[in-house]
Every structure is written in C-alpha cells, then in structure tokens.
Image (tube, rainbow, N blue to C red; front, side, top):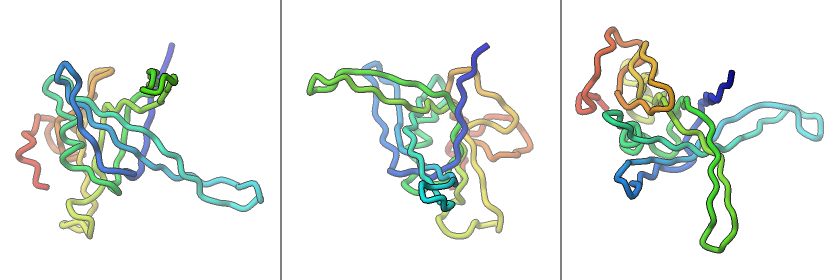
Length: 162
C-alpha cells in the first residue's frame, strides 16, 4: 500500500501565475511558505520557514487553476491538500533540472474577503471542494463552497460573494 498526500497551511509568497499547456489546459502555480518551530544550532528555540511550490490544474468542469488565479494574492492564507510530484527537464543551458511540487487537489481560502476584519465577525473559509465531498483521486477540485455549507450542491462561481 502506498500513500502520497501533503497537507499544508501557509501564506502565498508570490501572486499566482496562470498559463496554458499546448493542449489548452489551464495551470496556476504559486509559492507557499509554512512555519515550524525547533531548536537552532545554538540550542535556542527558533522559527524555521519552509517554502513549497504549488501547482493547481483545471480538470473537466473543475476550475481550480482559475479560482486560485482569481482569488489568491501574495500573503493570502490558504490550506492546500495534494500530492508530491517531482519532475525533471533539461534547461536552456543544457543542465538537468528537477523540481518537487505539490499538485493541489483541494485549496481552501482561509482569509476573509478583505485583508482586514471579517465582515461577519468570524473568519470566513472558502473551499474549492464542496463540504463533505471528496474529490476523485488525482484530480483537482474547483467547485467553490463555504466550508460547513448546508448542502453539497455545486455553486456557480459567479455566486461567490467576494
């Protein structure tokens, strides 16, 4: 039995960049920083920051790449769930390059609509996966819904209030 799953909560290190493959598939990439605490070489407790490369794809009716491009910005707080993937290619200089990324299957927007205080006094949480729904293995979610929503029906992205 094998498992390849990553779950992160962190802040975007740059604005998302959306591009299209030659076949026309949308893909959005961005960086994510996560913090952890440990003991430094001097024996003192300190904070460490890890940086992650995130990739979100549109697949079928799921428009996760487009939602990330539209609603996320540098500094946004997000929950990312996905799988680790390492890819290799030859750079223009002829050098072999490798990159490990998290191929996102779920992205939840943890920031409120504005950078300031949430409108209703509680932090709003938006998800690219409907509450209670599990995305098919290896595919990206892109149906926005409020976490904890009363129904699991699909919501039109135009109905999102932010």
